Every structure is written in structure tokens, then in C-alpha cells.
Image 1: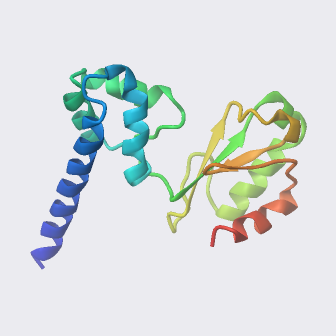
Image 2: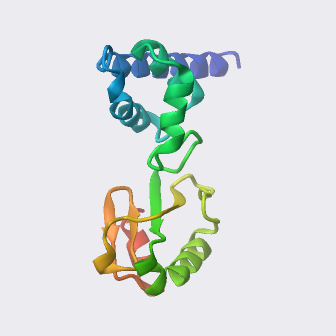
Length: 163
């Protein structure tokens, strides 16, 4: 039984070594905090507090500065998220074209609220003030893929691609 905690501790240590290696690529370039955080977030799909501390130490900036950057940009998360991130556009064009129905259907299908993660850890649902694709409103993104001109009936077919 003692092996499981040891394995977990080793996995965490390995993770922090990876974070340090990534951050080292940006050593001496504190203006590249955003780039460093994107690369670190790719490891676990979020930024744990320990990772932010490592980035701050390696880049020789304060932890509060790194944490502030991580909290300011909506593409970063400091809490665990699902494997796939769904961002629903809340811009005025998307609102006018039916984003409320899309959100209601999406949350119903996945069994989560905005900001929630599905029980199986596959999806986290977030909102975005604008995805920049107003010509295909209402729209959402799953990871880096944009889906536009949505109607609620499209959602099940879209999710089939992620099984």
C-alpha cells in the first residue's frame, strides 16, 4: 500500500521538473511569462499553485506577478479542468442569434453548469466574452476548433467527434 503515495509523490516531482525545464527556456525574459504559462498549462490543462511558484522562481519575478497573469487571461486556469475545454461566446451577436438556447442545451447534454466539468473529466464548460467569429454566431470552441451557426440540434453530433 505504501507504493501508491510514493508513486503520486514521484509523479508530482516529475511534473515540477518538467515545469522547471519549460520555465528555464524563458529565463532572463520575464516579459515572456504568458508564453511560459501556456507551455506549462499544456502539461495538465491547468496551472497548479506549485507550478506558478516554480515559474516565478526560475523567471526571477514575484509569485504575485505570475499569479496575476494567470488569473487575468481567460485562457489560463488555476483550477483543474476537463480534457476538452468548451468556450461559449457571449458577445452581442451570439446573444442575439441564440447563445442562450445553446448554453441551455449544452449544459443539459453534459449535465454541468457553466464553469463545471463533466463527471468523467472529459469536458469543462466556460464562457468567453468574444471568440472573434461574429459572422457565424452563435459560436463555441472546443479546444482550438470553432463551431458556428449553431442550433441546439447540432450539439450531439459535435460531441460524437470527441468520444
